[in-house]
Length: 376
Image (cartoon, rainbow, N blue to C red; front, side, top):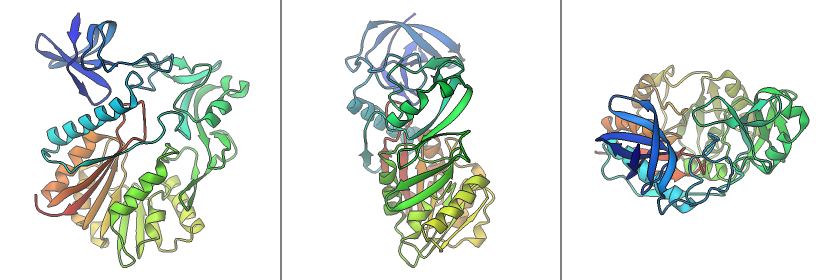
C-alpha cells in the first residue's frame, strides 16, 4: 500500500491518507512517498509502519545511531535538530488550537541544549546478556550499540558496560549524581545527590527528577521567573516531587507548601528543605485532588504533573484556590492544552509559554506555561 505523507502528528508520526482515511506512520516525514503496512486498523484512522521509502522527504537525514527505527528510544534522529525543533513547535501550536481553542497563542520561546548524551538517569532493560531499550511497539529488548546509547551520559554508558550489570535479567534504574558517580537501584540505599544552580537535592533513585542535566537549571529559572513571587507572597507547589521547584521558589517568597502523592518524594522534599535552609517550606503527601482549597491563600500555584496531566478534580481544586498566577510544567502538549482550557473558563489567559527541549531526538515535548487572571 502506497502513501504520501503531508503532515505530522504528536507521537512522532507522519500523516497521510489512504481512501480518505488518515494513516499515522511511524518515523515518516512530510514529503515521504512510502510503501506501508498497517498494524492497527481502526474505524476512522490507522497506524502503520513503512516497508520501503519510494521517495524520501527533503527533510530526511541519515540517523547517527544504527538502532534508529528499531529501538523505541528515539523518534527524530532522521531530522536535523533545527527541523526537529520546528516540528515540535508546529505540533504544540496545533494542540493549542485544536484542544484548547487557542487561535492566538503568545509567542513560543524556544530553549535548547545539547542534543546527545543529556540524560543523567534512565530506566534500562537488561536481558541477562546485554542492556537496551524495548523495540518500537515491542517487548523485545534492542541491545545498545557498542558505543552506547546516544541519549545517555557517558558516565551512564560506562557504568552499564560491566559484566555485573549485563548479566542481570531485570529492569534497572541507573543514575549519575552531580559529582559524576554512577548508581543503580540495587546499590546502597539508592540515594542520589543532585545540584541545580545553588540548590542541592537528595532523592531516592526511583523518584522522579528532571533527567536533562544540561537544561534542568534553565527550567528552574524559567519557573521561578514565571512565578512572579516577592518576599510577601506565598505559593503552592503541586506534584512537587523532591522539592525541585519549591526549594528555589522559597528563596524569593514568604512561604510555600508542597504536595505530592508519593510519600518517598515528600520525605526527600522535607530533607531538601532542611538541607537548603528553607525553613519557610511545608510538605504534605496529597494528590492535587485531595488538597483543600479553603486552606490555601497563595499568589502562585506551580504544578508539574505526570504525562496524564491534571485530573478533572485537580483542575477544579486549582480553580477554587484561585491564584493570581498558575505556572504549569507539562511533558504532554495534549493534556496541557486540555487542562488550560479549563483554566480559561475561570478567567485565566495564557500570558507566556516556553518550549524547552528536555528530550531531544524523541517525540516528547516539554512546555512551561504561565497563566494569569485576565479576560479571554
